[in-house]
Image 1 (cartoon, rainbow over the protein chains, first blue to last red):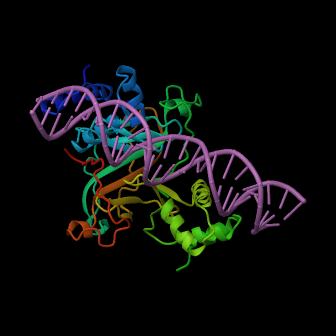
Image 2 (image 1 turned 90 degrees about the vertical axis):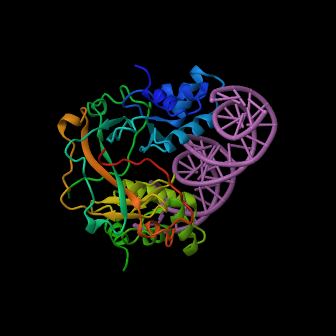
Image 3 (image 1 turned 135 degrees about the horizontal axis):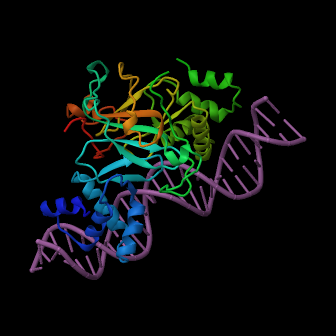
Length: 161
Length: 161
DNA sequence: TTGAATGCAAAGTGTTTGCACGTGC
DNA sequence: GCACGTGCAAACACTTTGCATTCAA
């Protein structure tokens, strides 16, 4: 399975370099939500001369081009979602930080009643479901978690009183 | 209008100090979404000896106590929402960063279909509506914006293709 | 050839920590 | 009195920037 991202970029005529190709390949696939630093570390493994600045520059440009989505996880670092062409939402594990894409059917048109818009021009909506992933529910701790230790304790908001 | 937060803390028997009182007073009210640093700056104006560490410590403890909600805005810094006892969602201006609470009626029970839960135990949901605030829509720029300059360009996700 | 991309290192933000001192209960 | 809160400064984690060099088109 080769990166669709890479193909799209090529089609757009985006100037390609070895560094950009490596980054695009790392970002291939679904449920990929890496931080800039994780992307940097993987990129170095394939292309030792690559620098952090290039990774950050590239991620910023890809985000501006609309090829990547920035997801603010519970950690300090943003994560990057290559699945930008397909509208979806996220499900995060509050213990180990595992992030998954979700496509809730039926509420694709979730919108804010005009009486609640406070005069805003509303153009989008992001939904983050919170909970515990299967590994963390079963107490087995972070079995396959992206980060070894991550005892989160962030804001929680229930949908009913 | 005096801080409900302060009263709640007193009732809980939370050890009160001059620093904590100042912070609680700064966090009084609705649609208050300040960053730690903004809270620090306001606190210094009232109590010059207060330190950043105390502000961060206090905010962390209030969050753990469930009195504050951390909201990850588009800026790097988290914002703190004192309206934790009342479930609600947020509306953010992508240009100036203005953040408002919203209480969408009718979707209070928004939940993830079990087929989409990927084995997670889902305990909460956060919704962030994105758009432009009245000032930014009308081109008048950041008329009463919390931050003088803030040309955001973050992830956008439309609810329909 | 040439404007854009890169590497490097330094500077910025935002947040946390270690430790000595001070204070509410 | 003593556990806990505080101030200070240094450490940290993440990201951005300035500038000389290199490279894709």
